[in-house]
Length: 102
Image 1 (cartoon, rainbow, N blue to C red):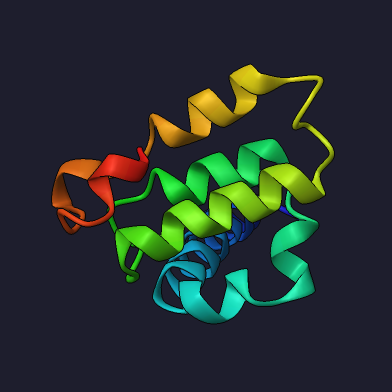
Image 2 (image 1 turned 180 degrees about the vertical axis):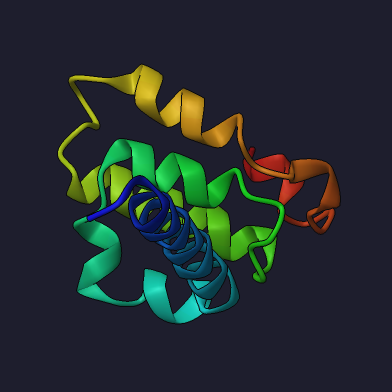
């Protein structure tokens, strides 16, 4: 494989990653209601909930973070993970009824 072909392949792989993220953002509601959501890593969840491209109400994002954190078994061992995830939310954009829960 030549260097030019290798660069094109790497470039396309980067595009694939971007396309996958865009798909996850647009299908966030479906993703968080599936087992796939619970199997994501801390880094993957952080990347997704911090993205401005997520199409979902903030209340759904909050519930998704809490369910992932609980399912990941981090509730007692690593409270800073939850704090970090919650800091990624767009809470000023949330409805006034959600804000007291934060």
